[in-house]
Length: 336
Image (cartoon, rainbow, N blue to C red; front, side, top):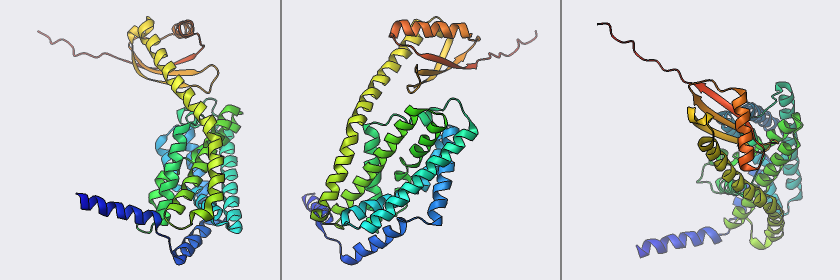
């Protein structure tokens, strides 16, 4: 057991401190440079991924959104930005930044047009979920960026491994920005923009750290770029921490509302609660409750429940009940 641990420790040491050859660095530069400029395939991927993500968001379908995530075109230039910043390669940095900016604005404009054409008045939970980023999203972005950089830096790891992890975060928030603009919903667009910047900086920082750790760029060469990346990412920690604290408070409030509805209202004694979701972006917050009922629920009952919640919680909520009727069917009594 001791020999096995010693062998593993030496492997870790070799992984951390082995300097890559100039040939391997040149190969990586050529590969990332090819991904870091605007061409027809890149634009096709942007348009297709944006269309899939936007329609998936509008239809509130997580499966469709995941399909857009796998394409992940915006990730291609981000790795180029990370390596170029470490190397001080101005040309590659400009090419990658331009490709990233063009792809982002195309996606925002396209999702805005689709949002105007569809004209939904109320968006679903998949869109609203991308309007309140927090520290958890930064953790996801850093993890995705790390596996992406390692996948392209280590030949033994398939580069497609990063595809599903990366897009966790890039195209859906960009499309949410456009959908917020289509609805003139400032808070939605601002929240999605913060999420996109969080993912962008988190992934870039993680890629830079991995490129240094695996030995492509010495630490002394990329120290300044790393410091800038850490500083920019650190600026986002404050609003993300505030949002995370707000998220915890919202979870507690939703639990309290659930207890008030189930235990304090006469109407809910005849209902079976299936699920409950709260949209905190709306003013007042909207509570969508999915219930099963044997008798019809009237608008008057909903209004009374809203007033009851306001009195108990000292906060106004809008209550929307999605009712599934229950029909009891029994076998007819057998004839004598």
